[in-house]
Amino acid sequence: MTHLIPTGKPIEARSQKVIPFSAKRVVEWIKRNLFNSWLDCVVTLALFSLLVLLLPKALDWLFFSATFEGTSRADCSPGAACWIPIRQYMDYYIYGPFPESEQWRVNSAFALGLFAFPLLFSQRIPQKWVVAYIFVLPVLLWLLLKGGFIFEDVSTSALGGLTLTFFLGIIAMCLSLPVSILLALGRRSQLPILRWACSGYIEIIRSIPVITFLFMASLVLQLFLPGGVSIDVLFRVLFVLIFVSAVYKAEIIRGAIQAIPKGQIEASYAMGCGYWKTMAYVVMPQALRNSVPALITNFIGLFKETTLVMILGLLEVMGAINATFHNAEWLGLHAEGPIIISAFFFIACFLIAQYGAYLERRIKRTKH
Image (cartoon, rainbow, N blue to C red; front, side, top):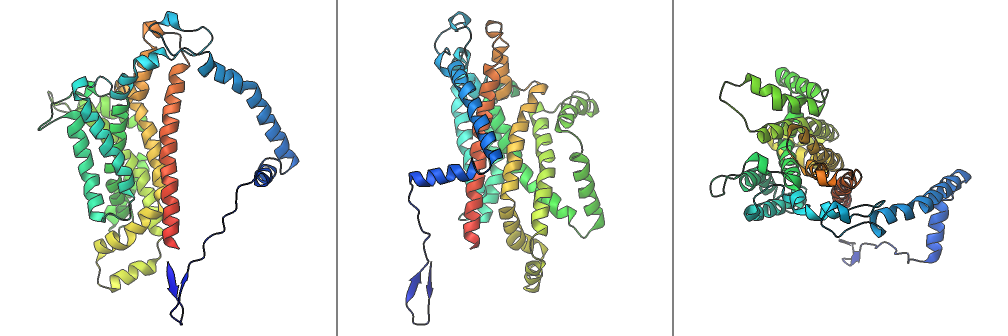
């Protein structure tokens, strides 16, 4: 970016000084961060001793003495990890019991869902296209994974593994965002009835555990339906995840809206913009940008909460892995399953968090 001085000669923005990497900088960083005081020295040495003591044993159990090749429990080495079932059932963990001939539909759904992350917070794509994609994506995912129209119908029991986790997480994220915006605006409304209704809904929902709503949707709801009428359990679970997650997002967005200077809103009204235009073009773009870190954290929590559907008989990725290690042939392998589940969620959530940090840095740059 350039600026003109009165003479008309452009001057370039001053670039930041790049400090070359050196051993001296490393030593200074270690002294400053690890050995800055006597307490820091004690904690650093204690943790380092613990790593030296435990890390070789952990690596030996996980990798060096572990069994990766084989066909049965007899091939596993005693006293070390056995990764044979993980290798054997990897496709099941990803696709679940989804028909093998239709797995291209799952791959297409993964591609469409992952594209939502850069699109959702992009500043280059017109806002109307982003909103349209958010509303169309759940429909596309439902058609691809559940079927309908040109696709063969797939039963809910055929959805499982990472496919089901991804399906629930992405759809709940996309549809809970517009619901949360409406709840946030409703709680700030000047109409008392609307404000009380939204406030009451938010306070009630966030005071009750998610698992309670899942049980109610799975077991209690059916009691109030007429005889012969049934709602797909997947639809009920999605409904709970969407409207419970929207409550927490609504409070995030409401706080971001309140942080916007009132002068901007008053200026927009003075220029002839009505309430909805002011919200759409002045308030919400700023509020969503300011709430990116909290929304990313909320989505990480929502992504992990999809594992709760296992108690309803839906085998998402955690349920699929647990089912494998409850097989009679692999009974007794207690650690491998939780390790794989933990590693998967750590990697997925870490990547989402890093993408959120990248968005936050980019937003900060655009403000200066």
